[in-house]
Structures are given as structure tokens and as C-alpha cells.
Length: 318
Image: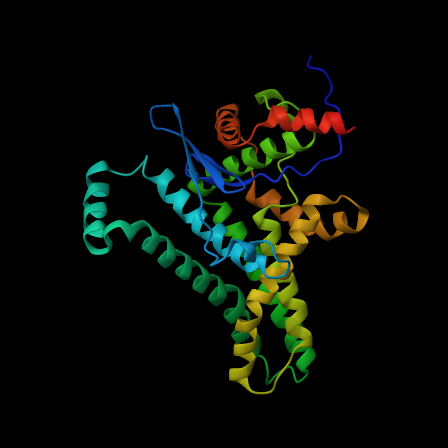
């Protein structure tokens, strides 16, 4: 019987990541790795430097401003690494044809252009689904519900229901379930390190698959803060209502980023209560990984992060 795992207080490591198709991306500062389990069963690991979308690197460090740039950076990097992982499972002939056409049109900038188009589409889809749709649905009941406060609350309830419903719906898809398993492996690897354990398959398996700095929690805070702000910020003109909702999105994203950042570095009771709904939602967006997925996560971590040095440093500071 294996020795009982000691419960330790989590310590912020700074490393983060996301699940990709049959793999995991891990990012540490400006360096990121993508580890993919290939169709042949091997683990392919690539390491690259990421250049921020922000015009100045200083903008990614200023509180309440950095959140917008970090959010866009995460979208760009996420789409880029998803496309890279998908390339292992695409038909080679079709892929070459697409690459040749795109290279002919955009030359050396084809990847950047595609990433930007995908980011714009993703943001537009999210705004339409989680901002505009709840607004218009709630306005359909204006003739029945005369209270502006009640309408605003209804809009917020619809936004939360659409958000949770969307997560539940995609979690039922077979391919997405495998991505969610890799998502669980990503969290487990980070939790294993941050709770002071060596990065082995056995230790990772025993770690939690929920993490306070997860993108799911970030999205929950975006939805939650939008509900609160839209209840208290009101105007009569319908066009102005839409404009305010759109203009507040960067503000809400920045506030949500700061909350997530605080949650990753603190474990007091207030932060735990604040993080609880997002952690609960992660039960839907993560699944227990198998050992082969954990091996992919370990490979992704070790490509960009010296966990042995990190653990030694934490031990010396005790």
C-alpha cells in the first residue's frame, strides 16, 4: 500500500497551462511548451518563446490593465497551440494544401493572421452568447415585468444559466471529454508541484484536479461581475445599454484577472469562499486523467520548469 500523501499548503509557482488535442501546453514566463501524445503513442514536445500582444511589456505588469492583455495573450497562445496539436491528427495532404494557400496569401504572417482571426471570432461568439443573448431574452419580458431591477436580475440569471448550460453541453461531447481529461492532468501536475511533491505519475495522480487559477474560474468571475455591474449600471436608451455592456467587458476582464491572480497566491477564508463556485464548475471542465495523460503533463512541465529547483527553494525557505 502506498504511503499516505501529506497535505501541504499550496505555494504559487507561476506556471500555468491549458489542455490541447491529445496534449498539454505549459507556460512559464515567456517560454511555453506543448507536449502531444502522437498517433504512434510517443510524446512530442516542442518549446517556444511567446511574444506578448501588448505593445509594451510593461503593460502586462500594471494592475487592472494587464488583465486585458493577458486575456488576449492566452487566447492567441491557446488557439496557436490547439492548431499545433491538431496538426498531428489531420490528413497530411489536406494540411499541406491549406498551408500552401495561406502562405501564398499571407506569406510569413499566415499563422499570426489566422490566430488573430480566430481570437476575434472567439471574442465575438462569447459576447454574442453570454452578453447580448441574455440581454435580448430578458427584454422580451419587459411588457410583463415592469421593474427594471427585476429585468436586470433576470438578465443576470439567464447569463449564468447560458454559461453553465454551455459548459454542460460541450462536456457531453466525446472529443471534449478527452480534452477535459488532459485539463485535469494539467491541473494535477501544477497542484502536485505547488503542494511540495515530486513530479511523479503516482504523486500527480493523487493531486487535486481543481485549481484556483483555472480559466474556468476566470470565466465564472467574468460572468458573475457582469451580472453585478449590469444590475447597478443602467441607462434608458437601448443602444446605450448595449454600448455600456460592450465597453465594460475589458473592465470586467481586468477585475476578474486580478481576482484570479489573488486567488493563486492566497488561501485565506475569504479567497476560498470567492473561489468556491469556480472550483465547483471545474468539476465539469476537468476529468480524471489516465497515467498516459499524466505522463504528457509531466513532459510539458519539465520542458519549461525546473520543479526540483523549485521544491528545493521552497524547502530552504521553511
